[in-house]
Length: 286
Ligand code: NAP
Image (cartoon, rainbow, N blue to C red; front, side, top):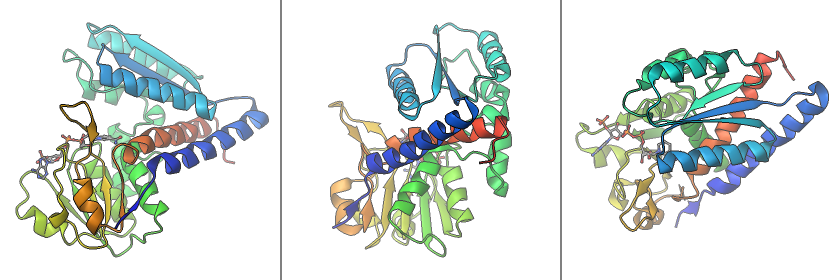
């Protein structure tokens, strides 16, 4: 029976470290990190994410600045706000909650955020830095997954790692982070043939598909570490991962639950990135 990886606990530990460092820096320099969160429109899921980010800022002692713009905001208006935030010295990190309404090109917005304030690590400059292993920020969800794997004490070097999903925000950077730690990495996607054969070879299996209960017990190697990034809303309103948990926990050595696994880590890593940005922008090296 698998051990459950407690994402709430691991994320609380990360936030506590950030809080303590923030407090110490405030005592020394009299400044606090600031995170600006921009939300456009009324998407209820986005609203929940933004509220959670604000709450996390309070927990770790950051200033948070919220900009809630109406659904019909134009791309020019949003770009203007991003420019203002780029120039604002009290703002160290900028996050535009995605998705944005259809009249706005999200790529144009991501590209406009100053790379040094891009705490989501979506800007092409930061994406490129991840590729060559010289990064300031890691994208929050994959970085959170790495913390969860590390919390199990699992050695990644030399292990067979399989990532299901190749999105720019999860699958691709996830594979790159595992590669940087010397995992032997395979990326699977919707055109992959014989998927189960590949996943059954994984010592570390990361599912980022967006399909409820997609990974079944027979796709998992005995003793694998199984990380479920999926967040799927079922018809009954319940949140469900990409992994069939009941089946997978019979095979895995460690497994993340949904909710309470990867989800809380994403916000904790956002706090860590904002602190990193604050230190870099203030030339603080301690
Ligand atoms: P996405 O952009 O929709 O990507 C899904 C990936 O799954 C694609 O690469 C797709 O392949 C692949 N896929 C779809 N059907 C497949 C199949 N039958 N076999 C193999 N691969 C298949 O989704 P995402 O943004 O990466 O997110 C993935 C999941 O993670 C979602 O449930 C999302 O809600 C969740 N998520 C959670 C967090 C968190 O904080 N916990 C953060 C971000 C995302 P193709 O490329 O070939 O289409």
